[in-house]
Length: 197
Image (spheres, rainbow, N blue to C red):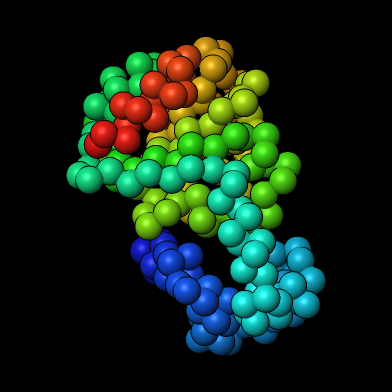
């Protein structure tokens, strides 16, 4: 079921007409616009606008909140950790099995406060086996809460600029089985190192 969710989200995100693709899948599963709107806590007219491809400008705007990079080849979570000079603060035992195909760099405050919830799948690029690097973090709680309530999950979470992480964030990471790393390495240097991969 998780693979199907990922495949559907990927098809919608990569489609030239994401609204039409979203409508196709909604109809395949026989879900009404009203029911989908209620589940997403938005108005049915918003669903209609998306499916009519009337909100493409908003979709393009969402990319101002984050940067995506896909690696040429997979790397291990441990190699990724070394490259960004990070420390593991949760789920170190899972680091050996996690593989990464890319990363998403995002300003946690802007993602949480400004980015529309229905745009969150775009954070995953072409696949979910990636690292989420959050900047503008104070305790790490908010990014982990957002991850907890979204259906797709990154393979690794990086909290930039802090060394001590909120206990609730660590509990969420444990429950979701996501390694959490912290680093203070300069963001420009992180991007330079990772973009060579």
